Length: 518
Ligand SMILES: Nc1nc2c(ncn2[C@@H]2O[C@H](COP(=O)(O)OP(=O)(O)OP(=O)(O)O)[C@@H](O)[C@H]2O)c(=O)[nH]1
Ligand SMILES: [Mg+2]
Picture 1 (tube, helix red, strand yellow):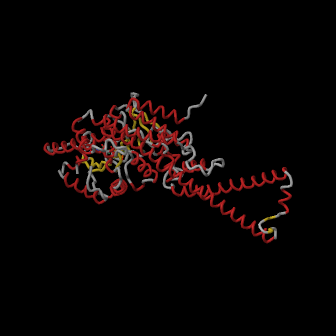
Picture 2 (cartoon, rainbow, N blue to C red):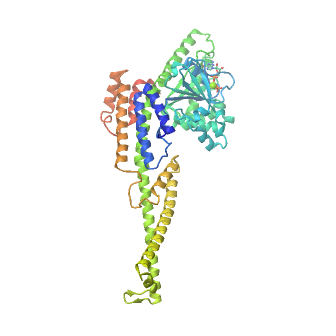
């Protein structure tokens, strides 16, 4: 019987899980399968590759920031579960990826579990580490662990707790993982510590986590949090400390946006003055609930993000992959024809030259002694033709191969900045196999059916956006949200190139008081 590939087993698992969590996303898996099969047909993917594994499926919230800022305490409080060790000294030296489990108790699994499973973020992170720090890829367990936790607050999300950002001996691998996590996350909480809001210990955090992030297109997903503000209660100088922190952020380019000041009530100092306590509490409550709102919102953002990824992938296949293959095929054909034309012309000219020089022409008739020999009977004629054909065929194949090599190198140079160059190489190789005609204008495996398949995925992704809009913009705050979207983007909703971010933002602006905050 036909053996099910590993990847299809994985996708089936993913689909099953998503069925319970968000049926729309479970349908999206089917579209990713269609894209995979198109990619395989044109030789862009091998059997075990899938676009779905290039997409982080879970809403991912990461908590980064300087050491001992209270990251782990925040997570414990959020989960209402005593999961992460906390302490005055730097406690965490690994990234913990925290997932929900139905089991009654938590479990810690080695980093390898994450590296090898495409259902988790950080799938194949060891390769990324290996690229920046030779030999470290195998020590993945030293950097990562997977924790499962039965807290209901965690259902349908993944959290990442990180080791403190203490840049002195920050290893390249840790920075690489941090960057990777930032890329994957739907929400990034960057923690600072009110005990030293602007000292040197912060410089590297600012450098890496603020400066590098303010100009990103998804800079909206970063929340900058000044934690432990309770320590300013005794001197009652929160405003000063907050202002100093804001100035430090501004120095690195963060001038407006989402920054908060909170403290952890479980770990806070005791407030001597009742008035001060009330003020601090109300600040904490306002800012914490704003942060919690964003955390709740993350599942919605993720759903839009994944449909966005689907659309983007289909467009990439159509606009980048297929058209690039077509362009380079054309280039290859031109090269082969030019070369063969030039060789043929050179042969003709030398043949003419030699025969004229040898005196074999009488007027316009040529009499070559060996020609008579070859055409003496059928047998010699056929043998001669067969030999000639074999030589021409062999030369043609060698030439095509040589030209394909040149063109392929050019193609690879063009895509060297993407991680898809092995895929392009594979696809071009499929196109330049010896039996494929150089005159066929389309990439191998590409035809009406594949083109229609891609269009279908694009249509489906638009339909998903509408289904997501129906689901997320109706049930809560129905009138207000619908009204705003109607007012802001009446035509946009119908357009085929419907702007995803626009719609998410419209929803978010309504549901989330933060985006209006400065
Ligand atoms: N006063 C006060 N102390 C806090 C607060 N949050 C955390 N702490 C304390 O700060 C210390 C560090 O907290 P952690 O949660 O371990 O900090 P972390 O950022 O996870 O630290 P590393 O993982 O080591 O980088 C602990 O002793 C906590 O009890 C807070 O809001 N106020
Ligand atoms: Mg910690």
